[in-house]
Image 1 (cartoon, rainbow, N blue to C red):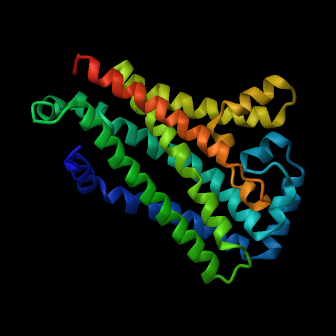
Image 2: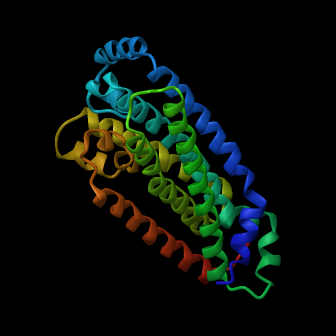
Length: 268
């Protein structure tokens, strides 16, 4: 691995860090502003009390009591919304790893250079993984900066950790998209299936939280959204094994996409 492809990916796509990081950071500041007013928080808490469990889960919380504290409000609301936006970025990044270059014909030129297919897809994946990490770090820094700047009484480390916990799920969506693009070969079909993966995961999480029983628990466990909730950091119940499971899924997905990309014809 020479690092040339990583450097080129970062050089041509670094602006995405600003677009996505500043955009999500602005959303974080907006949530901070709401959290800075106890009256607004209490008003929303009363509203959430009337919502069914599935709707409450959509806002990233299993208990309405989380919305009565500044950190609970920021983490629950912001993390659930940021997870959706980052899923969109992850789908775009997954397509950029191979599918977009393959469809445009650029891949034929790239693979004529003295670089192996395995090294190319690995470095492209690493490049976009670094971009995604930079986006999340910038988002977390802006959001935590808003907490400090607005003198909000909330633990900054908890908020920062909950936002950083979005990274494994972003890698998962990016990797699944890359795998689908490699297997299906058609960009439009890969986009549709990747979007379906995100939507179904979101629905499984919402339905699993609202319903009871073994089937509901299984649905929730199959949704990557159930592994990114920030409330575990607020409640002190974070389990590192959840992060490990997502990263294992990422490793398996990338291994499959690497194998498929190396063994098949390009552009056919």
